[in-house]
Length: 285
Image (cartoon, rainbow, N blue to C red):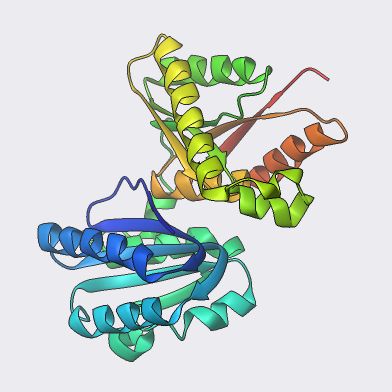
């Protein structure tokens, strides 16, 4: 499946690709992509692969045909993969390969995701300030993102994020990441495997949207948005931050064992890989 990643940038669009792509996936996605091209002219595109398992035969043909028809409609395409195997796999895709787009396509591994965004933005620059020069300019926080996990302790993380947003008069975005039940099965051998995964995924997504909407509406702050996105928490939060030019991420950490340790590992991964500032709120043990 494809899911759009919100991007705060003119003429750059991003999508996360998960699972095995089918003809049905492409029949939904390609008209959306065509519409973006018609509305904006040539665009740059980021494709992030997560738990990606390739294409079925009809989807591969859709990919190939679209590539032949739109080779002049893309400025740059960055493909972010989870590992080197997917880096190789991505090169055989028709629409996102060098066969049609020559030097417009570049593949990056997940740890290099910020370089993918820098490369896309570099191709989108029409002024004299380079990406490197922009990084040397010290600015106050204008876009703050907070990771929301719906745990009982997340209220403290939200309070700190709102406090910082008020202080800097910054935009505040709440982000919650959810993973497919099918992916949970492979990692945890969950007993939920007997259920209809598609229905469970949809219910999980709708519940998460409703819960996050309720939280956002309860906060006494105007410049706020909220997003529920598919994917692992650490990769989703980092990708969203890069796409939105976030300059501060606020995340909680427990420092416990067991399930709470997963939260800690997420915050640690964000601290290690984020290209913006990160504030880790220490939660009660």
